[in-house]
Length: 306
Ligand SMILES: NC(=O)c1ccc[n+]([C@@H]2O[C@H](COP(=O)([O-])OP(=O)(O)OC[C@H]3O[C@@H](n4cnc5c(N)ncnc54)[C@H](O)[C@@H]3O)[C@@H](O)[C@H]2O)c1
Image (cartoon, rainbow, N blue to C red; front, side, top):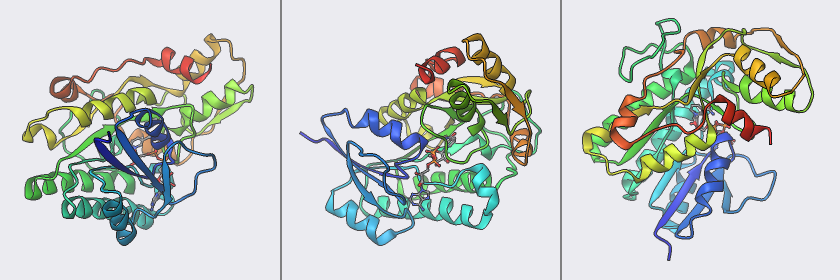
């Protein structure tokens, strides 16, 4: 018996493919995955090619499939977004608006939308950045995520929309990353694992918060299933697994017996990374819905290098 009917936007990205792997194992859940691109390999759930800005087509699907939960993942990430900031704002903010408007109109019970540590800025590379602080993001990606964090609170207060959010750090996974400033970590592991040298676009000592993908999926499931008070819902919750520099990752890979060399050639992404916190506080998530990471760096790399 199907209890929940989920629509996912941007479902073929780094987060979406892992989320689908886990959600598709639930026997009581129907999943409709959507993305602007078609899948390169077969996926286990229904799929439709849809632009997340296409209100009419999304509305048809929500009605036809009696969708009661939306995971809105479609976005243009930080590094890619800086190449076309107007497009980045357009996709990130307007697709959020489309999702929220349809969710309110069709009384969708719950929405998940991920924000990012890119919302931080101004204070150069702070350690242990608090959940709430003045934020002046450097990138259009960060500006668009911060705008949507504010919109999320607005729609929650105005329409009682149950929209839940994580403010994610860089994500490590075996699946390719999609154009963010922390992608170096996924790329370095893939290259070194295959015996290839890697040239890193960040400097060796650039420290950023990271998380392993399985922890992200666990956190999404926990957050979506929690009984949160009204006040607790209106957060984009900071979570992190561990802090990482490219040099630490290189040394961990060498320790695990991978001999390939890493070279360093920082580019425009270095400035973005330096505007983000080195570590973030995730106490709100721990206190409100029991968040606790299960993967440290070593365990994450072992998963990525079976
Ligand atoms: N991966 C990370 O490190 C990270 C960190 C913080 C937040 N996030 C957020 O998590 C979400 C998913 O990120 P990801 O890492 O899977 O990104 P990704 O780039 O790997 O995937 C995004 C997906 O969205 C799709 N997409 C882009 N524009 C679209 C449109 N107009 N309509 C429909 N689909 C479209 C792309 O084809 C892609 O499959 C995003 O909102 C991102 O901002 C990711």
